[in-house]
Length: 375
Image 1 (cartoon, rainbow, N blue to C red):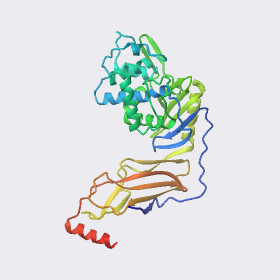
Image 2: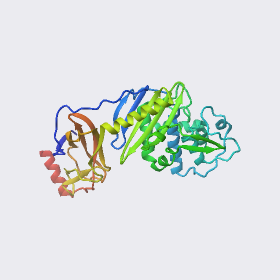
Image 3: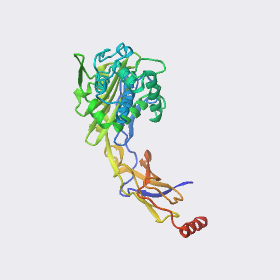
Image 4: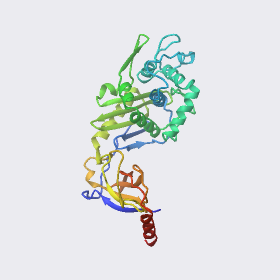
């Protein structure tokens, strides 16, 4: 069934020519991406779909599965974990767990997030999946569900392997899901600056936690092959930006370049609210229904990101399928809003029914069937 233009909304918006798109800064890194999580838009990116080794950014997926297990009450923060020899002898960064020494799920999460402990990751993987191998299967299944099409995991830590890879875009999808789906866990663990275990205090490797009070996470990574990587997120008021940087050249450069991206996004872009959650956008004609129309809107607040000063140049068109026939359930998709900035696509957003519409009686359905046939 063809989609047709129903109406052009935002009648007060004017359309002008030659909108100026801000040019992103030069970035020291193999691949990078900057997104506005308030709108779900990628503001700028370079080589975001190319495969690279993710190093300890892998631990974002390990954390996602651990938080899922906590939410489903398959594990608990106070639960004591038996440390295996495999976890104890994990190479690379460690929180220094030992067989026979008490450690809880909560402590292991801090060791994974603050200290980037590979030993903590393996212990958590074994606690959730029974073994790291089984846990890796869960990681790849979850990656597929999240739309991470160019990612494959072979371990829970990010230790180097030729078959362990991801992209800046896939890491963005993962970090976005972590912040969105587990906001309380994100707030609790990812801004923590240091953690002490086994009489050893280690600091969070994310330097931006000390440099920028707006930054509240998320994760560093480094191997010789991957270079220095950092996913960082900062929040100004209701607006949150997320940067992904892969393959920078030092701890200092990954912090500096990530800060540069975040600052650029806040300085040159605005988030612009178009519609509130549940706000009616348009009445759409309904056929064979107890009501001749249905109110359409959005299930969540609709926000778009635009260059500063350009919001008045937005245009939007409402498209729908024809005919729209009853019965219609509340929340059912009934159309789409296409937003553009001077002819350049900004995004397409599904419109849903804000109310149910029951089917008409026999005579009403028969009359509309005849009208549609004549039409």
